[in-house]
Length: 351
Image (tube, rainbow, N blue to C red; front, side, top):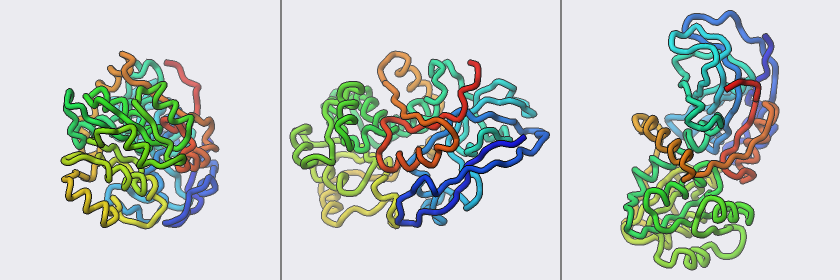
């Protein structure tokens, strides 16, 4: 059987901006038959995520991320349906997911590396398992629970940067649900600002490309900032930290503004900002959701319940076709998405 796959065509360089041409589509023969413990899957949806920028470098800068290899198939979060199984716990027709799903139309995988998913948890929206009811949702939920120190009734103000992205859009909604009295998002277009306030219930939104972020923050957060869900780093983060209250908390989720730069992760703050952080006793600890795997199952159930109750809304930006994986990643890295960036590879399945 001949299938299509995406391989890493070239590296952008440690300080370069990734482009669609860093990837290429090629055809490959799928080995058959499958052996004991293996399954053949048809790919339905693939995820592109900011952390993947690190995997484009020979050195990812992280001990838990392996680099993609030139001319080898790229992998990441994926959802698919089993077409054939020689695994004792997986059968034909099961929907499965993995963090290491190859960017291929079909693949033969080790069944032990797959997790079954229940379409009923997402009302049939299988791609949500890659977004709001998947890793981004869990990152937002567990991150706020572990590092945000949100206490219901204490009138805390939360600021979210990268607020219209997969994690940011969930974090703001979850911040409200867990007890923040005010949530303000920072994003890059008027359309995204309107989306945050009119659809997701944010109390205010700042377009960092228009006007002074510091002035808008002072206006929208008159009592200062108690919790900062940081997706971007850089100048925006410096500005927020300068307005954070004593004993406040930074949830260090991502640093997308720094991913095209050769700096350590997490990048050190500027000396004057670090001095403010220390003086005000602001926590800024690295957060890695993979350290909380025991919380994934209850977290998914909580997110699913909120979704079914209409308490959280999940937004996706979807491109179609394996050939658009590179374009989707380039768009993600330049803010072209609202909500979770998804690529639909095939919609030919029956729930």
